[in-house]
Image 1 (spheres, rainbow, N blue to C red):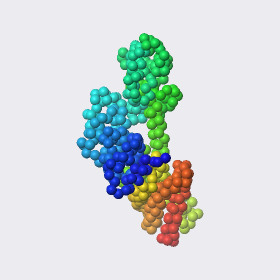
Image 2 (spheres, rainbow, N blue to C red):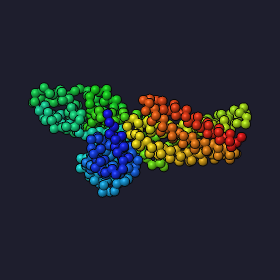
Image 3 (cartoon, helix red, strand yellow):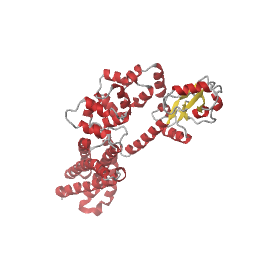
Image 4 (cartoon, helix red, strand yellow):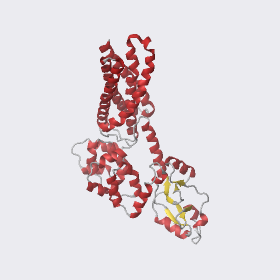
Length: 443
């Protein structure tokens, strides 16, 4: 089967490409695939592709993009384009992307909404991002508990939204009283009240419930959607199977990325400075643990004789390369899993990762070199470890890109084996660089 994302990336490498060519390439792609394709190309090319997308499809694509990618794209648009983009936004979409939008853009979107959608949005923002009340869908069939079967069947026929196999019953004050499944009334008499078919002890979700727990509750209920209620038992909306799958996916991705100090909203081609800053923080934390390990090795200083300083500092070099490489590896493994990385964009991605590695390598080599100079009172030793850090972090960036790509070509899961190989490579490279420079400069 062809990969439409890879085909689009390949198309962008050709000369004299037109907007019509791009539009034709993405016309059959769903919004989530187009969003992935946009995130799979350098930022400088995204505006060209964005201008080729039909206006009616842009909002759906924007919602599917990651937070950082979305914000980078919106910064390229002027006020008129943003107003046009949000002309048909609903509360559910705006709630999904609100955390990555500046306040002026949210105000523009709210001005374009009707009163009902604004009410839904104001209701949603009272809940945290990971609470079910923030995720609810309002395309549910709600009716008074006094209606009859004939009226209920008319309501079912009018609705085309997915997961619409349940009628949500409320009393005069708007409080939820129960649910009736479509299958329960298919053979009922038209004049019968639907309340007679209401299921007893029907499960529901509290609006403040964590979305992952809400997904668990939905799975155990064996239905496609559950009502979401506030503290007063008022019906807020419904949490359906689509929400549950999305919550699971985001949870897994967040766990994978957080293992190396990265954000699941990180963009594959985010600016070098931003990438270096976000990863540099984690490198700094790792540096503290590396110095702790070196301090314990230093307890055996008397037995190491002339090479004591090199032996004490070796773990720092290896550890810094290891964490830098694992950050790149995680990003590349995610890109491979989503089909974002191809032969066409591999060179651009490798260049970007080497720049990130070079920037972080220089910054942290200066910090470590100064610390070593203060610790051992040896400027040459400080210079030696600084050079070794730069070399090893650059090697880690190169390995973090190449290793998972090669493993993927060999049909070996890079998520399982990539980190083992990467750690070995960065350790060996770090020791050779440090001890080799130490031999040349110190002995």
